[in-house]
Image 1 (cartoon, rainbow, N blue to C red):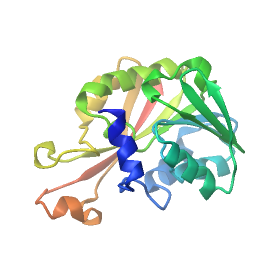
Image 2: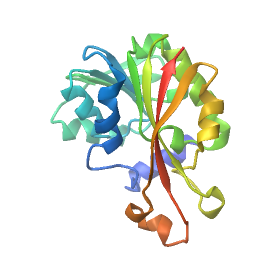
Image 3: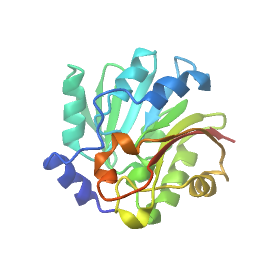
Length: 218
């Protein structure tokens, strides 16, 4: 999916994927991962997610990756922080408080640019990508995460032929295929959230499942 698609979404305010509350999967499952409070948490395609603030409140430093400068601006404004900007290769680094957001293409992020990563939280990254980009995304997480890194990933499943993404449907079998070479893969929760998603229900989609998956870097 071309970068211009996401820039246009943010410029026109088409950001229905943004949630105004912390994701319940994060609150429910993050404490079970045993991630030390001092660990830096990587949040790919982070947008302006308030989940980053929730993680920071628990002692974590956050490093996010995001294409849109609008999303980055809005996030820091929501936290009443004024970030310091600096160039870092092909990225623009925005830093304030416990937050660092790297403006640029997440799939091109290097370990030197990201710095040490102790855990990963993906709420809306994998499901934002069409099929042709997902293997490169999985490879990027494997590249950035040292052995022992725990990750919490949130995905959706629904009949893809009935609706275009994003968010795209990514089935459990595909998640396993994408990640199992480098990570252990364990689905920990599956909920039908169709009642909370009228845009899906109105076109006749019979079920919309949201899944929580825990990955462990081998």
